[in-house]
Image (cartoon, rainbow, N blue to C red; front, side, top):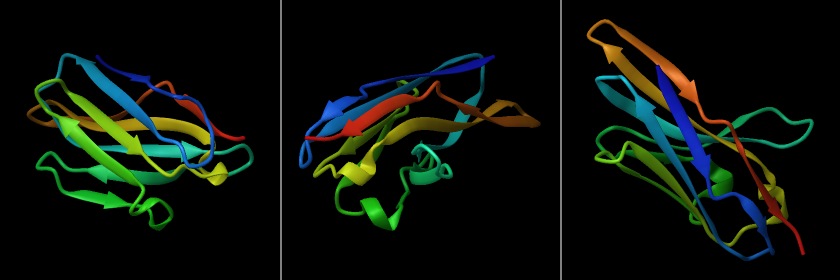
Length: 120
């Protein structure tokens, strides 16, 4: 009933920038929090950044000052602006949305993942 489609991944040199997008579609009442997670090979998935429906944000310490999460509620889209990228940022990035399906039901949904590779 809900689909999250990601775009914007790719290969970037250290110090470069990249912006990820994730758009939600389907039948639902509203979207609560949205976030970006990442997972490197052999590593656990970790929360990178999150944003509430009202725009309150949280960031992992490793990306503070470099990444910015934002959302466009009219487009049901969340963005992740990534600046000053480092090799350790290399991972598959997944978006997540906590979606209210009706008055008494909500669920988390995930995007398909997009590869971000930071290398010279």
